[in-house]
Structure formats: C-alpha cells, structure tokens
Amino acid sequence: MPLTLRLVIHAAVGDQAISASAGRLWFWGLLAVAILLRILAFNAYSAHAPDEIIQYLEQAHRIVFGYGVVPWEFREFIRSWLIPLMLVPPMQLGEWLDPGGQLYLILPRAMVATLNFAPVIAAWVIGRRISLQHAIIGMAVVGVWVESVAFSVQTLSESLGVAALMVAAALLHPQARMRAIVAAGALLALAVLFRFQFGPAAAVFGAMMAGKDRRIWKGLILGGLPVVFAGGLIDLAMGLAPYEWIYTNYRLNIAEGKMQAIAGAGQPIRYLLYLIESWQWALLAIPLLLIKGWRRHPALMSAAIVNLVLHQLIEHKEYRYIWLSMQIFLLLAAFGSVDLMRLVFRRNTESDWATAALAAGWAVVSLLLSLSTVHRDVFRTDNDAARAAAAAMRHPATCGLAVPRRRYWQFGYSLLHENKPVFVLGTDGPVTRWRPERVSAGFNALLTYEGNPPPPAPWRKQSCSGQHLAIERTCLYVRPGGCRIDAANRPYLIQQAMLAAKM
Image (cartoon, rainbow, N blue to C red; front, top):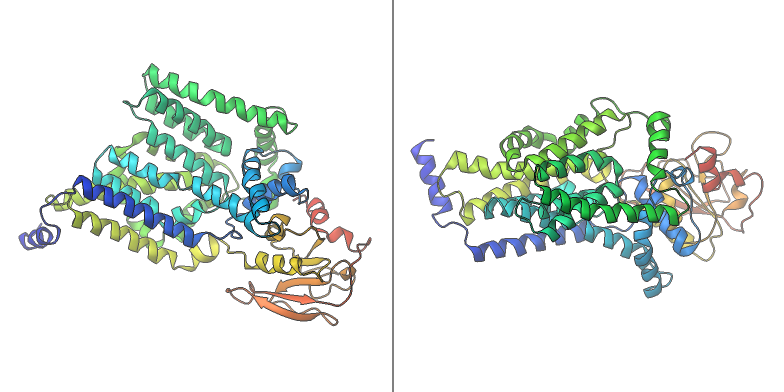
C-alpha cells in the first residue's frame, strides 16, 4: 500500500482501539437503530407471501373468532398447527383490549416480529467470541440489512425458524454451560418444527458443533426431545397423528407435485435470479467477503450450504425458502469484511473510526438496495387492497363484498375481520369485476383495480386508495340495496372458489 494512503488511513482512524465502554455504546446504539427500523417497517396488513395471511393468521382467526377460510394446506393437513396456536393468545388479548379494533391483528404480528428480532442480538454474541469489532459489524449487518428488517416483521415460518437457529448458534460453543447447550438443542428442534425443511441444516450444524464431545451431544438431545414430544402432542390435540403433516406434505408437494401444479415450478437458476434481483450490484462484493469470513464459523456455513442445496433440489422455489442461508451468508460476510479491512489496512483498524466507517458502508449499501422497486414491490406487499377491503366491510351498509380473485389471499377474514360474505371475481369468463350483474345480488360493495374497466350502473365509484401504479391501486364501487346469496353467486364465495380451484 502506498505510504501516503497509509498515512491518510492512520490520520482518519487514530490509534485508540475500541474500549469496553464504547462497545456498550455500540451495542445499545445498534439495538436502538435495529428496533427503530423494524417499527418503521411494521405493517399489520403487509405480506411477503400468502402463507402468513391464509395459513397462519387466518387459522388463528378461525380459532378465536369462529370464522375464516380454510386453504388446501389445512384441508389436506400438510402444516403444523404450532404457528396458528402461537398466534391465538395475542390475538385474543388484542380483541379483549380493543373490541372490534385492529389490536387483534397488531398484537400477534408484533409478537412474531419481537421473536424475529433475536438474530440481531445473536449476531453480537456470535461475533463477540471473535472480537468486539466482529460483534459490532455482525450486529450492524443483521440489524440494518434490508432483507433482515423486511423478513423480521413478517409472520413467516422461515423467519421464526431462522430466529430459533441463530439463537441456538449464539448459545452453542465448546465451552458452553450445560443449560445453554440444552437450550440450544431445544431451539434447533423448534427451528425444525417451524419449518421441517430446515431439518438437514439444523442436524449438520448440531453435529459439527458437537463433534466428538459427548457432553454437547447429551445436552442437545436433552433439549431437543421435549420439543419433539410437544410437537407430537400438538398434532394429537388437533386430531392428527404425530408428525403426520410432514409425511403428507412430502407426499403431496414433492411426490405428487401439487405445489408445482398450483404455483408453477421454478427455473433451475431461480435462486440466482432472486439474488441478482435482491442484492443487485452488492452481489459482486458479498461473495468475496463470504470467502474471507466463512472460516469464522464453519458449522453455520455448512448449515447454510446444506439448506441451499436442499431447496435447489425442490422444484418449487421461493426466496424465503433460502432465507436461512442468506442470513448466515450475510453474517459471515460481515465477519469477512472485518478480516479484510484488517488485512488491507493492517494498522489502527480496530478503532472506533474504522468500525464506524465499515458499519456505515454496510448501512449505505442496504439503504440503496431498499430504495429499489424490488424491495418495495417484489419481496413485500404493503397490502393497501386489504386495508381498503377491511374499511369497506366495516361500513354498516355493506352486506357483501367482491374482491379481485388474482390475490384472493389478501382478503382473508383475518384481515377483513367482519363475518360478511366475500366473493372473488376474476378477469375472464361470463362474470368479471366489470360484468358482475349475474352474481351481484350477493354483494353491494366491489373492490377492483384502478386500471380495470369500471362496473356498469347502478355501481358508482366511491373511493380509490393505494400508492402503487394504477394496476395495483384499488377502487371501491357500491350499489344501493341489500344482498342475497343464491345458486348463481354461491360458487364465487371465497371458500367455495378456493375449493373449486383446489387452493
């Protein structure tokens, strides 16, 4: 390195390494920033995937309020009831505290977001075993990275599974006390219970951490068995054989290809395309940092690779399926960025200034990516349509509502929260949202996209909402008169339409 550049770096960073008191300031400061970002990102109506609405919140809503739609996953019993049952207490509490309000929806989603915050603290703990600087940068990356923030506020099995496994990684190390090892075993089992596809990754991670240490093996088994037993009890309580849902899931989704038939198969390079879309130009640097940093935690790296390979072998591909791998890669890349900075600049790289510069670099990259349309419109939907539909359903004059069929999952009763009939209308066939006459006796409110043709008289536009393009902005139309369910419109009821489409 040229002498002049070294002198500039020396002048910028100074000589003082990070003190213990400065380390505490870093921890609490990063914690505050990470919490603030998640508060700003939190949206009770938002969705990354249909699962969090229809499969989790909707099923909890059925238990608490007695009505809701049943998707094919719960008709065929390919899901554990663990997550819906977790959502029941905060949902019920929200209704008690705010009858008829939105707290029933806010509290369960806030509870999950709180649990999903765990990787931020876990990153500090894992990094602290290397150095204080690794802890700071690891926590900074997990705390502010755009995807870490976005996934942490969503009610997804993947997010909960990542949180459980990352905390297990924070607890588990060769010198860990037995109670920490037992807790790690319980969390690894819980991660698999949240998403059984994480099983191979969790097993590889646990086996590599335990190695030939019988004490660790004993602790992991002691911690994991009660969780496995509790998962079986949940199945029995809900009328299933223990873990029957895993076998049924494999049979229907993998052996028979039902998910591919519904959602389509993914391209072999689909995950690479997702990464190009999501990380964009940052994809040029992160793999290089990962190469530098993976040795800091080979067990986590192995778990990430196993999880990625497993999901690559599955036909249907969604980015959230590999979020466990991506979260680990980001953490290890953060460690690699510290190591690379130390290698390149050699002197004075453990000072507050050097650490702040590196953390700021990661934050700027994340900020720039967050401004792209990909992260605003592709990896997360704010669900303005659901808010508009919920407002329409709450109106006393509304006795039935028709909504777009294309995104039926945005209109589950867990979001609309009114026990009134909901109909789904598409854009083709004898009945559409702009030709609803044959079935409109069933509803007197109709929600459609602003870019669609308007329905004829006596329908009149009442309002439009949303901040996206016209094809995504929704407009509410109303007509005078009441509602009557009959043979013509009954097949368009949301539950009947889902049954007919095998959704």
